Image (tube, rainbow, N blue to C red; front, top):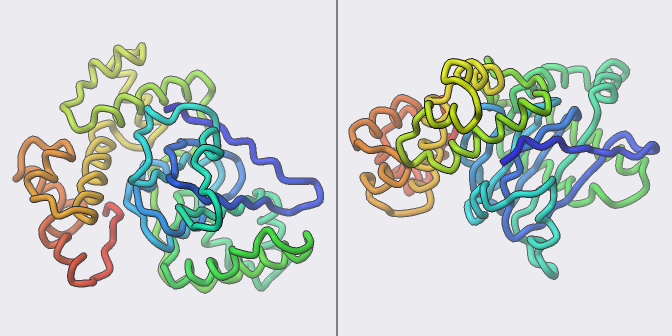
Length: 314
C-alpha cells in the first residue's frame, strides 16, 4: 500500500475536472494531490481514510479535501489494501459496473488552489467559502441535506458545454455555503506536507504492516526492523507524517472495524471485539465508550431505533 501521487490534469480550457466512478467496489488507493477535491459517494458503505482520520461512511457522503491531504475510500466489499496494488485507477476498468445498474458511485470535483482563491476574491457572494476551505485542510464532511442537494446537481456535471459545466460547479460551491453542520475529519495536529519519495515509500511499508496485522498484537520493534529504522526513529517518523502515534492509529483501525461490524452484523459484542483486534472485552468497551461516547451495545441499539449515528472518532 504505497502513498500514491495522483496527477490531476485539468484541461487548459477548463477551470476544473470531474470524474464519475460507478464500480462494483471501491478499492483502497491511499493517495494525495495538490488540488482541492470534493467527493460525493452514493450507494456505498465502508471505511473512509483522511489524514489520521479513520471512520465509516454510508449513503450521501460528501467530503471536501484540501491540497496534499492523503485520503481514500474503501467499500466493505472490496479486497484488503494488500490485494489492490497498482497505480491510481488501476482497477477501475475491471470493477466498472456493466449496463445501467448503479453500483458504488463517486462523483469527484477537482479544482486548483489558485482558481478557488481567485473565485473567493472576485465573487463576494462566494467569499464565505474561505472558512470551509480552511477546514478542508483536515478534510470536512457535510451534512446529508447538503449532500442530497449536490447529488441532484452532480448527475449532470459532465453534460453541456464547458461554460455550462462551470456554472454547475459554481452552483455546487454555492450549495456548500448553506451547510450548517461541518465536521472536520483529520485531527488539527495532522500535517499534510508532501513526503519525499523515499519517505513515502517507507511510510507505505509501515502502513502496509499496520493495516495487514492490526487484529493481532503489533510490535513496534518488528515494524521498525521491516522499515529499516530504529524504534525511536520510527516513532518520530510516524508522528511527523501521520500527526499521531502508532498506538493511536492502531486504535483507530480497530475501532473502525468494530463500528463496521456493529452496523452491518448481529455478531455478539465479544465476537466484534475479537474480530477487531481487542483481546479483552472490558478494554474494548472502555475504549469504544471513550472514543465514540457510548457503549458498543448502545451504539448498535441506536441503529435499530433509527437514531442518526456519528461514526467519526471524537
